[in-house]
Amino acid sequence: MLMRALYVGLSAMWLAGGLAAAEDYAVEVTDQDRARLEAVKTFADNVLEQGRDRYGEAHTPLFVDGFNTETMEPVRWEYDGNEWIISNQANQQNLFRTLTGLTNLTGDERYKAEAKAAIRHMFEHQRSECGLLYWGGHQFVELENNTNVGEFDADCHEFKWSLPYYELMWEVDPDATQEFLEALWNAHILDWGRLDMNRHGSYGRAMGDLWDNEFDYPEPFFEGRALTFINAGSDLIYAALQLHALTGDEGPRLWGLRLAELYVNARHPETKLGVYQYSQPERREEPPDDPDDPRYTYSTYGDRAQRQFGPEFGDIALEGNFLRGDRGIYTRNALLQLKLAEQLGDAGEELLEWTREGMRAYAEHAYLPETNEVRPIWADGTDLTGFEIPRYGYFGPEGQVLSKQTASINFLYSYALGYRLTGDEALWEMARGVARGHGLGDLGERPGEGVDVNLDTNYSGPMALFALVDLYRAVEHEDYLALARRVGDNILEQRYHDGWFLPSPDHLNARVDAIEPLALLALDAVLRGAPEAVPQYNGGQGYIHGRFDGHGRTTDNSVIWNARR
Image 1 (cartoon, rainbow, N blue to C red):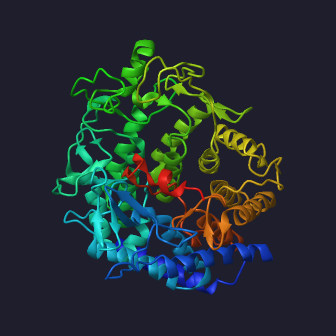
Image 2 (image 1 turned 135 degrees about the horizontal axis):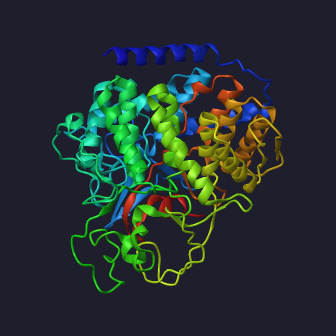
Image 3 (image 1 turned 135 degrees about the vertical axis):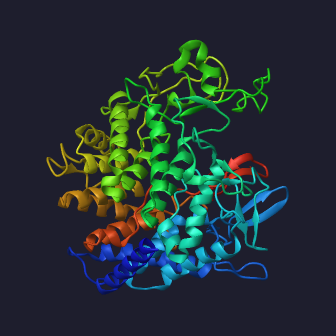
């Protein structure tokens, strides 16, 4: 209870400070600086005015996931002849961060209040008996009848990089938040002794012993019945360590670090590369003979990399050891763990070192700075560039040639932050190469040294803006701030259309969970000298995955957010 009171007290203190400082800036601001903030306010006002539930007979404080910007009709999921208006609160967590940041920066309390009202409604009306909410990859609330929908796919709880804004949930209802975080672990951990866990969790599972379970310290790549993907594992690590931060309880911290360490233990002992998962799926039945059978790539037939590449590569050919492009290990997971380590201080030192070690290994073995590309490799360092896939399987069709890929801008944020927290020059060199490869110029031999950034860049990605804001926080070099402003202006010019943020003018549907406004607020907060005023972006992203009429099994990103005019 003491930790809860302390958290609420600190939140109230910040709000008071934010209101007092709402008109103060630490640097001279321009009309363009003000225009960026006004764009975010317009976006938020549009969400509050048009995004609230106004459908069916009973209206709620919930938000829709997005709009068709030509008709202003809410986006819908279509399955089996049904059309459901989507309200998936797991897909709105960056919106809630934006609304909270706006309240802190402007003093207008209604933004954060509306976010809290939506959270409170979910706790009161869309919570299962075990404490899980009806949201995530395979569940959402449809707003015509205010009922939860999951029959379009697995009808279960799923998180993969969702990373909700638990601090705000805690402000709304600490007991319900703690119950949810504990239910999340209880539903997704199938075997506590080995932490065999799955992305799918049951809404009907009774609470077990939780943090009082025994741990057996399993060997890497044990055969399990689940899929220990790092996208789902990251959400569990984050949930446990956030619960520790909010309550002070040691149980969730211990188990969160145990889970993180299983990925570390499964890294290749020589290269320190990997892994996407620390287990391999148990073979429970024989695969079909026909590779065109839609079940052919199911995990019930054993490790899919071993089936596809084992004859050529032997024991290294496991799903967890296959590293190709940006699978999230060194971007989203690294970013999340770095931020957790910074938040936890001394309690996060192990997490920080594990993350640094893995990022350094990837920079050494996979990254090509001269071309800003990453090689497809096995975790033992074997370069797969040019390898022709010999048979159809989970990782591609027969005859496909594995190739190098451009290192995404996501690496810039994680590697720049990694350098700030560790001082590891290998991390800085990769961040520098990624920035140069995306046309941002030279960040310098080290932060603030030999800087030659490209202030004429037309790059408009929000991840670059987050990275530059963080760099400026670390080293107040004026060129980092100037480049951040330039990227922010590009976002306004290229991605802001009629009060909504879109990847391009050709995109049809606008998400309420767009991260561009959150990035612009992060910049505004730094201009004020108050970066803590805006909740930090931690790599989280919402999604829906399931069957959609006319498209088969797909995602909302494919059929809704990538739709063109």
